Length: 452
Image 1 (tube, helix red, strand yellow):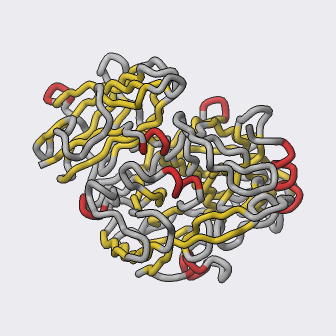
Image 2: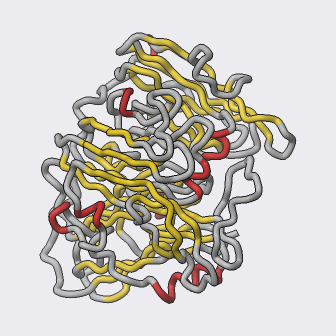
């Protein structure tokens, strides 16, 4: 359980402006305190252990894993630019980095054991790709059978690929939400197995205790980027007192819409971009709250300073020209994906009766350009967030008579329910369809698709 004590400690010590790590408009304006964000590409980064006090009132430090000694780095790149990142592994386990949501080349997808050899301790690997889309993307470990501990220890970050013509906004705020399994003394509590997925007891935003505080001009507009880096925790986000509009889901532009009942589902791996307009009067404006228990505040928004001139009407982001306008469902290759398992019994997590194995036949082997429909059947008692690598997909309506007006790369399948997703297999290679609950992923809750 996330404790009220932990949240109160965070509130007392971290209501600070996010000028730098979360508030930078571009690499040139980044805070000096955030070397990864301030450093221009190419990046040379070391994954390394570090002891730090996560909860302000903790008696002991936690043994976390960091990028160059920092938690939750934010890397920014202009759309059209090349991503060049050399990773050195100084942790105790093999690593590889997946750029979650980036539809890049298969050899750079960062799946250790499938698309690359895992980076052994003491070794390095260079990632080189040109992201085809602007957007908000998660950076996280992805090694077959060995990702949970690296995520548990905090090894994640964000890649922001900025539009060639950025939206007009007073602030560009990034919130990477994570939870931590902490013992009473503040050290990491990772000893006991967690076959269903490890739920943390303490929330952080960009590696700092939640909640955090930002300021923007009265009448101003902020771009809010939200990403869920938790191992297993799904939640809903509430936007209290905010006039907010979603402009992108999972990194891809969407039809502009207001969150239903001012809240959004937020599963591991999900990302949202929103435009938020502040009231014309100065003072506390709103809160973003995680609906866990009685609710836990993540962000306080304050209108301060000179009043902003009238802003132009909201306009949607331009859609990606590299995604299809339509998907010919009548021509689709269709596959069932039955998800089973029960950690309360010793039944393993399986897809279509088997744990993931790269030496076995793929779920599907299709030619490039083929439309694909996957029927995801969750036959477990747990919600199942599933991520498709290398592609973006549509969530189909129940009768195959249309789809939701946004693209996804991660979808949560409710317990005991079935949903269908559709995409055009336009990216050649071997691509995972995998659980975003890292302990389930490590236990084999994944399959793969080959595009030739």
